[in-house]
Amino acid sequence: MKKKIIVVLALVLVLIGSGAFVFRKPLAMLAFDIFLSDRVVSTLEGKSYKPLDGNGDVTTPIVETVKPFSVLLLGSDQRGHETARSDTMIYAVIRPKESKVLLVSIPRDTYTEIIGRGKKDKINHSFAFGGQLMAKNTMEALLDHKLDYYATINFVGLRDAVDELGGVELPIEKDIVNKGVDHEKFTIKANQSIYNGTDALNYVRYREDSDFNRTKRQQVFLDQVAKRMMNLNQIIKIPQLLDIMGSNLQTDMQPKFIIDLSKQLLTGNKVQITSYTVMGESIRLNGISYDRVDEEDLKFAQDSIDNWMDNSIPTDQLLRPEDQDKAE
Image 1 (tube, rainbow, N blue to C red):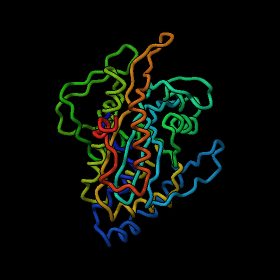
Image 2: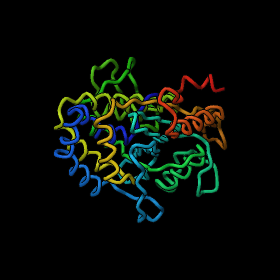
Image 3: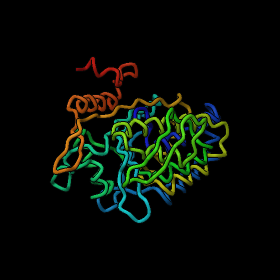
Image 4: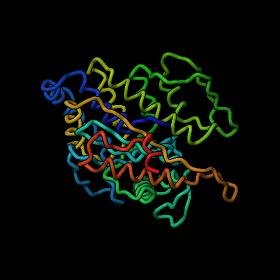
């Protein structure tokens, strides 16, 4: 699930940032204010803004949009009235000034301490047990770094957004068939020029090979969504996409913060994503499969977060996956 842009920043920050390349430089600010600013605020305030403190009534401090900040990205796969699960968990670092994003993906079956439960379990169970707050606390404990914000999106929103975009390109060279007895049945035909929202949703859900490959598919998918958005040659799609995301998104990023961040991206360079997955070893405990985290991978992820959050470090010295061998 290498190369994937956030589940929410992919479809919120990048979504909003896509307007940056419709208008350029001085005109971009004016165009954004006229066409999108009020729409973004009303949509996010009315549907998406959910402060997080355990009680839901504390305002999250606004982080300056010129400095690096972190976001927990959660992809929820909630179907009907069942308990929501976080099938995607990413620690994202955004450097707005340079338009660069680091995505550290944690596979859903990673065996770790669930903060607030007093026991170890699969990390994605933290969301099912205690929502965004428990997921945030658990991710902070695993990576030993605080998070400034969280953002959760239901995968239904991803499907609808892909359809609104006219589909996405996916590197599928062989048919993907989900046929497990306990799994939803579907087939994704290979070598299509464009894949619709249902196929894209199934692409990120498929896990009959491995949890790690699923994470890589999610990263590929998000990267392709970002590219599709950046290639939009008209601003007319943005309001519809915002409505889709507003209905399927929860975040404690304040609307003003998102507006300021969008303006920063409007006059900056094209967003560049660096993705890293913390790998692990498959183990079985009491008949249940887990992934035991690779300590070297975990240490490199922690070092990378330190590196990217340091505003004094120039872009050419930011750690990337290919630097891991050098660091060991």
